[in-house]
Image (cartoon, rainbow, N blue to C red; front, side, top):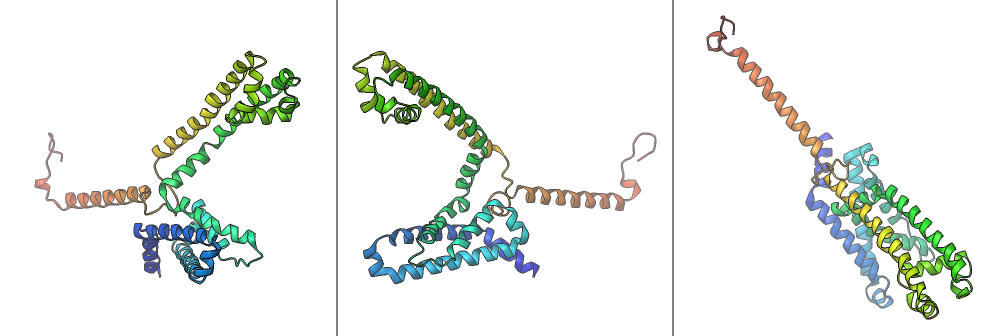
Length: 282
């Protein structure tokens, strides 16, 4: 039983098996895309449904094998739980009237996040950057709020349709921040007052070129930290370059065995062969 479990563990953690699962995920994505074409479904609907059934069956077998190999440790890994949830949704029957369940089948494509190591690192880095992103988001919200209040006060009479109240000013400033509102909001106002251009240029510099770039900086820093950390992941990462604890354990075991052999060799040596220190003591 234990040997079979070890063999299944080596199988599910091997690189060829991982590549096979990634290929199935991509194939499943193509099948789901082809199902959106009525003509394709009329001509090849049976083939696509059969392929979809086969792919889901293989996903179920994979999850069962991983649970058998890792047992309770499977449910201690976040990525493994994510895979289990995606496959669980996939096996729920989706009839013609259950469009929500049919849409949820697209979650299978997200299995690429757990199957590809580089994608897992990006998602983990984004998760680690959430505290910094929330702080920067609060700063950006405060800046937009201040400019929205001032814009309402300054431009309410000039453009009541764009800056008539706080909510309207916030929507207009958001359009200006993403460079969508300059032609129809800022440019007509420049013809009346030239200093308005400088006002919105300052707004764009503070929001787009400073606050939004801070999001990128925090995310990149989190990715660098994640890349430099030892890859000590759980069940899902084992066997894919993340087995540093196992290697350390094996090295320590070999060192202990080597030390025991040296000790036995010293004990078995005759007293004459043991070098003696000055004073007659070995």
